[in-house]
Length: 201
Image (cartoon, rainbow, N blue to C red; front, side, top):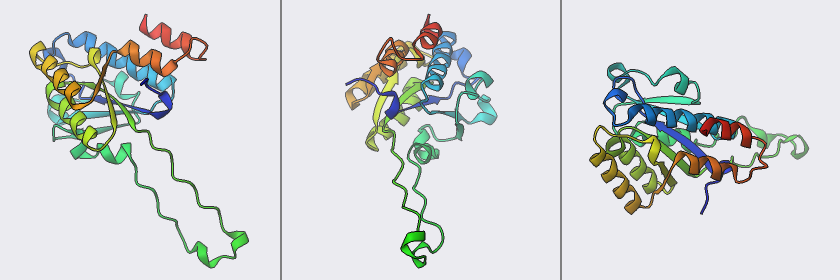
């Protein structure tokens, strides 16, 4: 099974200034997150962000934040508990007004429900806490969850690697930034191929 850009959403978890210096290979992890966000924007994949206790850990860097449609502050480790599910699967609006009282030829046709994007690509910090808990709850919600390993970090490698083991066992797909990029593209003839290629060189 390959990733499909038209069915994907990207979630960037807790890349915050007071946390990143403590993350193993934090600069590289943050650089990969930025690449992912830029690639997603080029390929029209929605990007969402989260911030754990931003009053204490600070806001996501502006360059990354600007790529997100919305950044959700949270206090609970899993972003699902603090509103992420509402943006990933927005509720359909009920019809407004009393359209049934109009003659049939004046009624607007009912809009079909918006297609849901059920494939979630996750990256963030810390891998064994907020990324893990968010991913496991999203799997319980029956999303297809893909975790971008080279854009995830923890303070200690052992914790990060244990998180990846547990995520794989729970059914998450483990991928890298380049895997995501080329699966979203699928073809060197894609109109954004050169732009994406320039980002990952």
